[in-house]
Length: 90
Image (cartoon, rainbow, N blue to C red; front, side, top):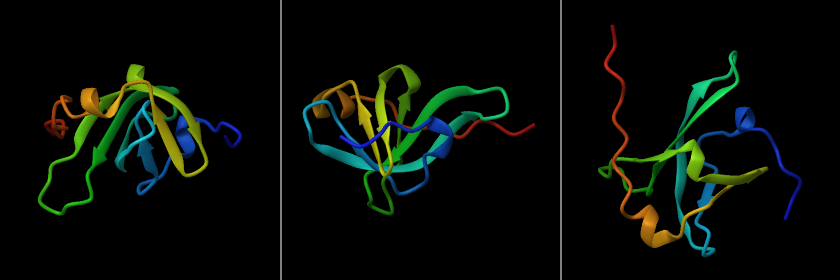
């Protein structure tokens, strides 16, 4: 495993890997407030254009290394996560 990196360097397109080793998607958005160092989670897409990204709360994110985010849940549990909902503006 590569050296760990902070959540603030995660970029769109990084691989997201479940605890069982299966790649479940790619980072679509990193959710949080970098200035306050508050990491809320990730919106993870399956790669299909018409598929809504799933919301992965920060407590289900494990190790983060350059190019890959590892989850603490397996692919089956990942499949039960809720879709990511954009916050209402205003």
